[in-house]
Amino acid sequence: MGNPIANNKVTALMTKNGMSTNRKEKALNLHKSRARSIVKTALGAGIGALTGYLAEQGFSWMGLDLGFMVASGAGMGVFSALDYFSNCILTVANYSNVRFYSGKAIPKGFYTMRQIRIAFRKAGLSDAQAKAAYRMCATTLWDAYTVQNGVARLRSKYAQYVTD
Image (cartoon, one colour):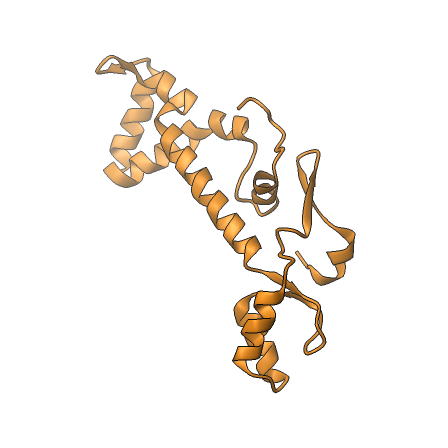
């Protein structure tokens, strides 16, 4: 929980793609953007401004210290956890569905199912051949990355096939 360095591949790849940032900084700035903007959007700018003003004045509501909740991001904890979890699923799914084709029918490289079908059609081959070739691709884009000191790094043998 307290480790500021992403020590797993999914967090490092999300950070690389701008889907995840330093969690401590994010938690400290929640009251400045996300929490207050949600209240403003849902209830109108006047209520959002009033909530922010009351929190700054130390007003408590139903025994809850609004200043603490806004400053600590306590009201956004569940949202942030679910946002992080759904981003993890999307990242793994995206990177796992892009596969490395090393055959001879089309140029070597990383392809989604759609991209490989289009390339096979242009080469005069069938969709069935494209699907079979895609299923035979064992290396995914997920496998092409390693994590070193919390940073996702592309393996050198795949560098010519991946552009950022």
